[in-house]
Each structure stands twice: as structure tokens, then as C-alpha cells.
Length: 270
Image (cartoon, rainbow, N blue to C red):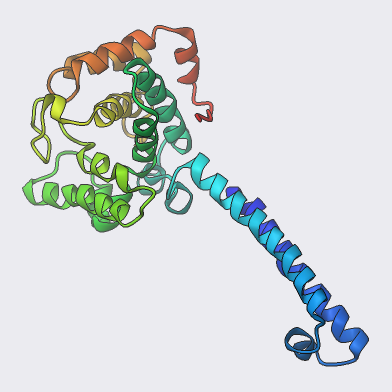
């Protein structure tokens, strides 16, 4: 909500300017406040008032647009899903920033295009937007789902893709949201395997799994140290995870700059 403060201030300034000018006009003309708003306003004064207020509203729009681009679509409104649903760890409010940082480095390693990087960014912030279609009891359950519960859980993939498809600027990432839980060996919800899974999803899956092992969402889950989590990633390479992405991530994690990022500080990736 703090991200909205500049937007609210600009919009409030525009409204206050309009109302103050109308109130002054009403006072000097000794007419009613409503009549000053609707009648008796010289055209030049009305044009100037509209221009200045329009500029302030434009600044409010620019501020809002900047928040959406920097913080990730829907992240502002929906908040941190794991923190809200699971009363997550102290680091859960920064999970997306950490995942974005690591994914961005892997995207550079695999020479992803600028458009693919933007879609990867949207995936990071919107991958669980389909949770709105899943019963809360399923979202809060820990442990293995039964067959019926798994079907209910999988609906969030399709619902998330449907939501993004309705938004033109995000529609190109809709298929990534649908595929982000696929297993490299074909054992995922859609049955995609290997290279048929988008690269952005394979990268996201590795980083997401690592982050949840090091910073678990539930206080009942013991966090792993970096080395333990990397060994776990290697264990799942070839089954749930792309072995090539796993090895690239492990290689990156040997660099001091990446290890420092694991401390949970926020990063702005542009």
C-alpha cells in the first residue's frame, strides 16, 4: 500500500486545486459553491484549471504505472500469497525480489531475449494469481494432496492463464503461468516434458524450489542452508527440474555476488 502514496498525493493535489479554485470563485462571486462549479466560470479560467489539474492527474498516472512495472502486475493488490496464506517466514515479503534476481541472472546465461525476460518477470509476480479459484482449505493444507484435492489445486494454473489472457499487456505470459508447474520428465499437470516446457518456466521452477527450501513458507518447515538446497536441486535434476538449468544455477551460486543476494535484500531488476 505504501507504493500507492505518491499516486494518491498527486491525485489529491489535483482534486484540491480544482476545489480551491472553485471555492474562491464562489466566494468572490457570492454565489453558491455548486453554482461556481457548474456555471459562471470564464472559459480561460476553466481551461487553465483543467490543464493544471490534468497535469497533476497525469503525474498520478505515471506514478501508478511505474509501480506496476517495477513491483510486478497484481503484486500490489494481491500481496504476498505465501505470507497471507501461510503466515510465512520473515523473508516471505521479499521472496519475489530474490526469485527475480536469480532468474534474471539465469536468463542472461541462457541468452533470453528482452521480450522473454519481461514474460519471465510477469511469471514471477503472477504465477499464483489463479489461487483466487482454489478453496482456501486447499491453499492452507500442508502435505500431500489426494486426487480430488490435486485437481482443485491444478485449477489455479488454468485460471491464472485465463486472467492474464484478458489483459493485453500481460497476455504473452499467460502460457508461462499455465506451464510453470510442469516436471522435466513429463510428470506435471499438463504432461509437458523436456524442451517442450518453456525456458522461462524451467528457470523459474529451479529458483522457486531453491528459495522455498532456504526460506520455507511454513514455520514448521526447517530451512536448509545453501549447500543443502543445492544438493536437493541436483537430486531432482532430470525428474522435476531441467538438469542444464540446475547446473547453471549451482555454478552461479558459487559467485560471491549471488551468495550475497541470498541474504534477502531487495533488488530492482530493469
